[in-house]
Length: 172
Image (cartoon, helix red, strand yellow):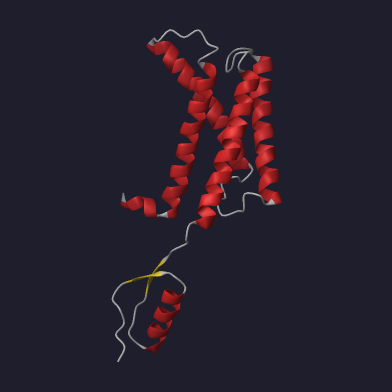
């Protein structure tokens, strides 16, 4: 797929994958505690609850700038914001559970679901930042021209590891 080479699509793909990961985590925690009859309405209700919980966590992660993927996973500013986002999201889900019990999560699965989501998110974000940190940063440069300045820029770009796009400048 040609569009995965663009950074914007990679970030959106990472967020979509994270959402699917969170929905799966919530469903795996809800199924053992919920009386489940496989009808369309119960499946839709479980998916809706899982989607709301995942969106809540992702909203707080977004508000605390946890989706800046260029940061070090062990930097104090990232850890502080990430920890705050997890605490705020858990507090909101817990508060909704206290006000309207058993609407989003059952009493039996509440604590285990919040802890497992926090662990999954922590592992995912550390792994993602580690991967993006070791992945070589490549960029494409189009050099227009054939004069001495273009030759100088071509030499600079190939020495720094960037990929040259366009016609090569012939040296005489």
